[in-house]
Length: 301
Length: 301
Image (cartoon, rainbow over all chains, first blue to last red; front, side, top):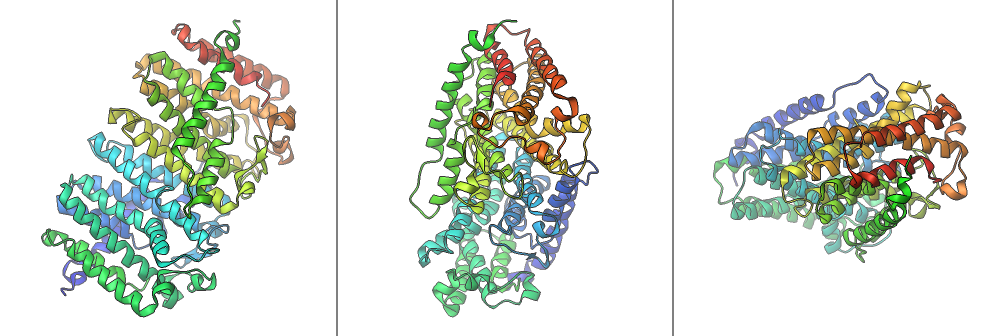
């Protein structure tokens, strides 16, 4: 198979989206000297603290299929990343996953305090909808409402938050592979689906293109999650920047414990091929999406 | 002055909005038997747990000035109440105000657990934007986007969450009356402002009507907050359903400690008169808004 990671210039695209996101969050959440400064600093810490910026890159790579205006792409990418960052801040709280480190840095509640972490998460989630509702995101309010409706569904109790609730339930219930797959589809898949769908909404993709892209996102999300579970089982904490072996320690079923290491690796590889296959009707403009699928399972963090 | 509470039938209107909100949340958040059931139950507990439903009533009373379609009113009222309920759930958390009781019932993290309370709050906030983005809320997407933009601004770091952050800072800093007023304007005022503004957006109010309604909301919000502080200082926990004297115990400045009891009561009364005065260009259709202003300071919980 073609090495799209090299041919599509994925490394450069990743560096570029990281820079764009940092610039964007710096503009959207400026420092302040007023009594809200601790909250604002906690928001900035949570949003500017690094990460692969995979979801923003998915928005950009999908929108590139349809030549969407760059400012629209950037704002939607910032909105989805704000939701992703908020979810990490709340998931890391002591009452949730109780993680002290994230991306090699103290988690938000460790760097600040729990109250600031709760509020910074709340504010980042709210900011996402403020960004999307603004006319700068798209001149057509139908498009803005479609984006907001899709993001709210992906992020809420029938999406990401529902998945996180299932993940907590998994500590005391033994879920089978079907239920664990559903859990991951909600917890991480829904926002990955949205990132691709958002590019399609911005590009006013045809129903047929939309279906292909949905198939791509679904397979990519699952491959991505299997790789996350593999990194938790086998990864190096110095590279991943977070505690590893947590799922096993918590006695939690993951896709990897349920399938076994070998089958999990094969399954991730098969999903990547399948994801790329969904893109067969697109030309070379889709090579960045193809590269992201390949990257999802070869990354070491 | 006329007793609008009696003449406008406020008691009946309050009973009616309580029933409407409970019916609405029951429909929007149905029970489920799947692994997300604890989250769903925590959301239902937080949204259906009573309260005065003041913000929904403000949406309804303002929209009544412009004969807005009832379904639109109801959906916007549910959205603002979902945000209010989420804010209470997060504010009650041990890392925030650490309250065990709310409306005479255990707070959500006491009835469930902290993780469920964090997630239920997150999901209710997200649900608010899902409701507003849906075509059932208003056929015109411009109106939906205006509602979403206003709610996001009112609820986020430049609104309610910013006010809560200031409230936490007030435990360690001594704020003067000006800063404490600003704190309250953000923490409770912003969502009250939005409730009135939402009725005006739905009714496509003229700029002039909008300005009068904004003035009304601003004065009402402050009168409401002074009364809350008075109830905290002098109220009966059996009636208010929550711990009283917390602010004093925490050594926190409130509008009441800064003004003194007598001046605070006079100020609340003056604000109510001023709020009603802002409505002078409206006919008897505004009597429910006038009644709400009078009620804001005579309530005992």
